[in-house]
Image (cartoon, rainbow, N blue to C red; front, side):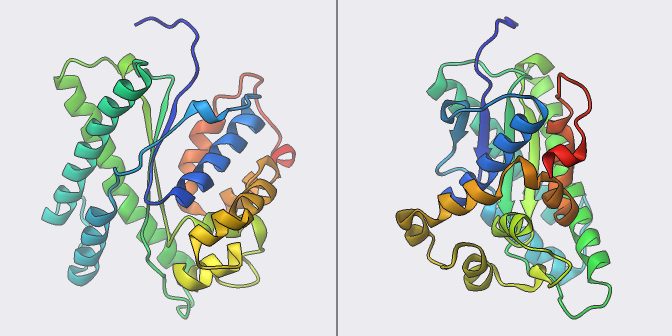
Length: 262
């Protein structure tokens, strides 16, 4: 593997373009705060028609109906197979379109929205949120492990493979933005439907094309999803913590005080 310095690739598998924009702002904030790196537009690669949305929804519906979140159930195996297909396709697509061989210096974000509104009336809703996230994350992370395992059988070295980081949000990417804008202790944002409630709360419209056209979406992200709000995301969004923890570890200057990043 040639480790000659080149631009880092941050590839994002997502549902919609607005989700991609949210994730991009989050990643830019992490690298700026902890790595003193200003990522540019050409560092990012967006997949327009590659996602795990339908497979994820099918898994969640079956798991809820059968009360079975096992990592080895038939519906979990189906989801893991789909994740492998998507990740494997993503590798080829990135290499073909960028003409840059991927390496372990690159990052592949596997994101999706669950569209799952968690019970706002249960007094133990925090425990429910964490338990549901934990169960789903165990399946997703096992799928990532399986992906690496299968790539080894194809004679890939770890230096030839990107860091794959899942980011599956409850219920949608707007919850991450809301955590930067509002105090989650004041009201239960997890109770809001992704559309229209949560989108309206964040972008003042549930029409995403309209939010893009008016510039409102970019205005909100540029103002709120910034290094200063990383700690707010970390506190309020458990499903984003591993991603933040792992990417912030790359700081070349050692520890960065939490206060410096909000």
